Structure formats: structure tokens, C-alpha cells
Image (cartoon, protein in one colour):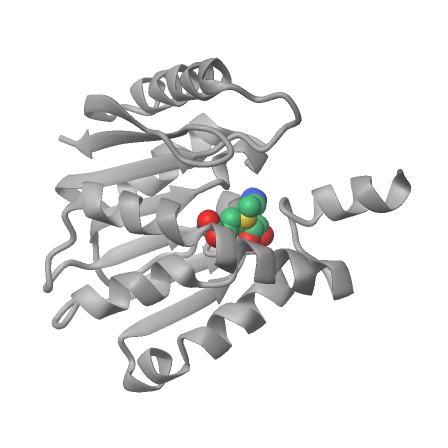
Length: 202
Ligand SMILES: C[S@@+](CC[C@H](N)C(=O)[O-])C[C@H]1O[C@@H](n2cnc3c(N)ncnc32)[C@H](O)[C@@H]1O
């Protein structure tokens, strides 16, 4: 039982050997969620993009295939995930197209640009102060910049209803943080539906 609990914790902050396995699992089951989220954001080739909680770096990799003139930054506080994402995105990092930063989202760094698009997948549920953090992210965004927060519940017994409840919670967080034009999208995926909540920094 202890090993199962320890493995489950790896999705919050992957560490050590179990963290390596969790990262590998995320890269096999996470692609559909990443692809869908990025499509909803309508990423353009000159956008500057920020991903929070990049894990093994799938979202960063997919985004780097679209972006040509903009820059992609990623934040994650797990050293293991930083290593996996750096390996996956080696060429884009070398070209200067991608920059990955090891930090807690509660200590957002400053950037010498503003973001057109921000996304985060299966990470917000671990943030200690989601509303404060979303406010901080908004300050890093351009006017009319768009944010997408995606979650697929992975607790035992989760249903589509669980997904919708999580979506409603994220809508409220985004409203409280000052975002506008908030909308919720649901996609049927296995093993359970995934929600993406979008908002605009007006
Ligand atoms: C379940 S994984 C999802 C990874 C990736 N987004 C994906 O969909 O494959 C959650 C990620 O969020 C990161 N994370 C959680 N809380 C964080 C925080 N407070 N600051 C920075 N990263 C965080 C974890 O280290 C982990 O890489």
C-alpha cells in the first residue's frame, strides 16, 4: 500500500526512481490532453507561450513545432521532470526557442517579455494558492492573452461528474483572479473525461 501511495505522490512532485517512471507514464498517456489543450489555445507561430508544470515536456515539444518567431518558457519544481523535459526538447533549447525553469509556481520569475498564451495540464490541483498564483500569471500576460487550465481527474472512482465539478472550481478560481470570457470545454477521453477552462486577460 505504501508503495502505491508513494507512486501516486509522484504526480505532484516526481522524485527519484519512481519519479522517472511517473514521467514516462505521463508522456505516454498525456499526449492527447496536451494536443487538445494547445489546439484550444489556437497557438500561432509568433506567440510567446508559458507552460506551468511541464512534467516530461510533451506540451513544450508540441508547442515548439508550431512556434517559429515566438519563445516558449516552462516552469516546474521537479528536478526529475526538468531533466526529462530538457532531454526531450534538447534541440529547441539549444536554438534558444525553449527555456525551462526550475521553480515553484508560487515563486514566479520575471520575464523580459509578456505572454500571448499560457497553459497548464494536470498541475493546478497541486498548487497551494491557486487564485494568488493565477493572479501572478495574469501579470505576466499580454492584454487579450489567453490561459488554458486542463485537468483530468485521476482519483479512484472519478466520473464525468467529477470532471465537471473540477471545471466549475477552476472557473471560480479564474473569475476570482480577474480573468474574463471564461469558458469550459469537456472532452471524452479514457479513463475519464477531461476539462479545459479558458480565460482571457482583458
Ligand atoms: C501530473 S504532472 C503533469 C505534467 C504535464 N503537464 C503533463 O500533462 O504531462 C504535474 C506536474 O506539475 C508540477 N507541479 C506541481 N505543483 C507545482 C508547483 N507548485 N510549482 C511548479 N510545478 C508544479 C509537477 O512537478 C509535475 O511535473
